[in-house]
Image 1 (cartoon, one colour):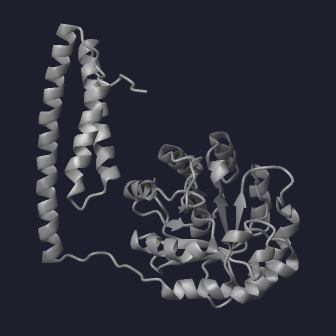
Image 2 (cartoon, one colour; image 1 turned 180 degrees about the horizontal axis):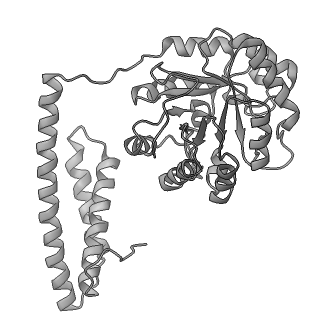
Length: 361
């Protein structure tokens, strides 16, 4: 996908800031928050109009009735405004209302049918559209949503990282899993990517830390839920910050710059490239041995998967890491991948396959 550089914000103005309440609760509340955010460096004023809630009975937004409130924000304070859309009807209404930026929420991104409906309704529209990651950690689903919009002619595309749901007990509302948005950045280096620390953390006291991590990882900006009276908010009260807290967060952020050409970095990178080459060569040797073992197992009628040997490999890995400054879980993960590939190769041998179509469940 190619991205149109024309936009109402300048990507070089770092960081992009999208802020405002989780929900547009009333005209008074929207205008109060917007008034408090004037002059604080906003690129967009955000407010949820339609709120997809997990269970019925929760506040689900004011709907179409809230759009004139956002028009007032735009007209009276000069702030560009942004709204989440989930259906073609939402798109029609916000475009008619002159909303400046749309975003597709995480639940909607999960559903390709819904994304296609939104994409079709945006054909011919000249408006920036940001796509939040799906609730599950599936980068292809995220990329697919962006591609559907791109194929419909939307060129002013961006992404928002809001973390991923997990059933396990956790300190964050949604696990950051930074490697996934970083892979998105690798695939689409010119596309603006924002971080939503409010939804990742789920607690206002985590917003500063997560915002700084996003800056350290060279995100283009932030989407921060902001409310003048967060404890009384009708949705996501726990994660919203006040306008003054937002200014404090933005003022304390350390902005990182791109690395310029320099001999010190070049030397280290050359060393890393050499080590990476050695790693590939060692992996080739290891897989060659795995193939030989596979032949022996086939000849002697042995099972491919040997649980005792697998445990031995992992225990050896942990012992090797104990006296080294290395993350044991990360190293174990690498060895799990290596073992999985070894099993796949041996299955191919036993089944006389040569392709990569064997699935390990």
